Image 1: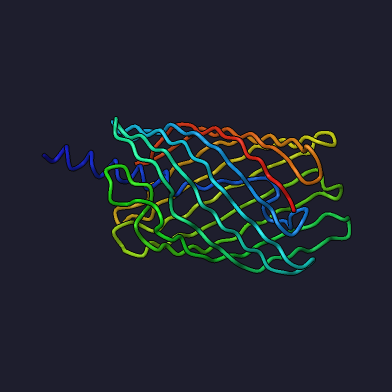
Image 2: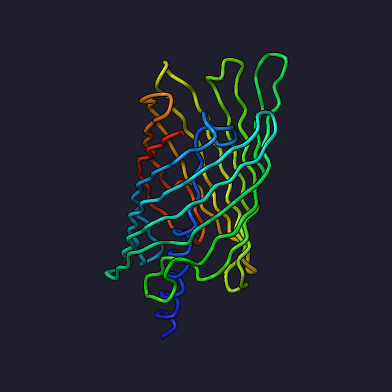
Length: 256
């Protein structure tokens, strides 16, 4: 009985972690090429924790909006549709909808390099199914606070992008979480951008810290000034009481 309860708890933890996975990307601290961007993402991941195995396919729609030049506002809405399989059990449907808003801006230095930043706060709404054996959402209103930054070289071809997000669950049945990451990117030719970096997730449990650390690679190809496609790959590097595995995906973005 104790082992069974432990397996159920581990499975619930793993699902929650996968549903709250964060991603770091190129240039996320900057204003987009236009004021609006539609981001269409397809990802597949295989993760495991002890004897629990979860495969997740997701189609995520992201809408972003920027205002101003050196100072303005940023807003983002994220809605995933998922198919999750956990040890033979399956579920499909929308996940939790996230909406965030905050100020943004940048500073240009004498050598023409620049530092871009976005501060944001928001809420994750419980739109995903949280009552099944395989959950698609947390069932709670989670509060999120964070920032993203991007440093661009003087020719705008090299970057260092960072991110930080603190999540506070509505109920204390789940621990607070901290998601961090960075990407080092380089433009190669007029259409290609290549990058690599790390992402991390830490759970602030009363018994101590649980964490995961992942390595990520990104490749972007600009089809035009308004449309680009992107490939990503991510794999676990280290973890403590957290799932390990890999994620692959492709993004298509349209700026309008």
